[in-house]
Image 1 (cartoon, protein in one colour):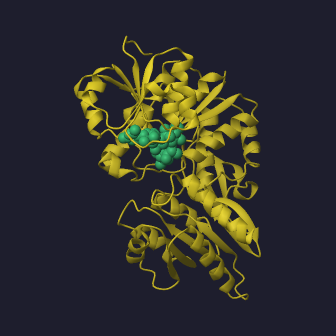
Image 2: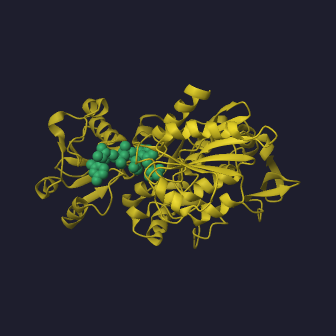
Length: 449
Ligand code: UMA
């Protein structure tokens, strides 16, 4: 795994870096730990796993780089950083926690990536496998660093891998891999869409079999190994899954056979039907009990921060979809709701082009509340003339949303949904989308729950 007399260097002391330090400590591998943030608070997790004399904060100088052969880099560290260029120019070995996981040859590994829906598919798969009585764990971008999975004997490992994690990972051998969909995201880091697509496709490189979204033209697979497919259209054969609408009800089909109706599940939205299709394709390829997995998913409730209906009172439903940090994800959220929608958008913008979102909003009964760093940009770019308010923060957005909901005339029988689906990242005010979602839920429950 680490073949060198010099200590390894861990870069980044967030969740990933701490998990690598813990793993090295357990396996008696010498290391030093770096974080380029000079004022980093040494958390309990850091102090517990790393001796203070082995922690170096601030810029990573050439002299320090020369004292290591192996660098284990956290996903938040970008390839363009000058110290990464220096490490490469000194021909040192850069790897990730996923590479270390790979070197342990675990069995039954499913890798999931995609611009949207990857966490949902990961959690749905974990749930289905548990329902089937398997010992399973999910890790990676979903929140538990992959190395944490090595401390138990799991039968199945579901790894959610983001483009950040795939970028510097050399190899991940898996049984099944899956890309949910690809739309432009994180282009500030990955330079352009072509490069982003290439990074996502790395997930297929060492996979025994793959699951393809046949309706996404950004996913290209030549000479695919054994593959099954899913999509939001009809399913072409028995090894594929799709969605058909019959008498205004959506059904999941396997080939031509209806296997699940949207009315039988608790998850909201057509995009979640697609996520279930993708997961069932994996269950099928793994040769597991598909019928039982379908039964199991009927009880699966919403996932935190993803179309999470957490409060319903006085005919008003509150939904936390803080995980929607790009336009496509917010579009799916809005499309999945009927009736009056009070939509909270805002945060740190990733683009100047909101045309596609505007198009969808124009066909809906929607009130917009724009908050945060990019509220003015959104206001200029989403040209719905009325029903739009600008506020400073989430707290004011909650108050404003409630006021608007109350002002909708009683004779309007349509249901009212207040939806936080920001289409932007949370980094203007929060350290993560989870923190933003939790704040939103707290504000709502404090006042209106
Ligand atoms: N750091 C440096 N130098 C740099 C950049 C960062 O030293 O140039 C340091 C920071 O100061 C900080 C640490 O690195 O102390 C943070 O590391 P990190 O950003 O890699 O974050 P982790 O805490 O290790 O969490 C990462 C993922 N974060 C990112 O990819 C940004 C988590 O995904 C993931 O759950 C976790 O590993 C476990 O695998 C979060 C995420 O935001 C949910 N993902 C993005 C997304 O979903 O859009 C990709």
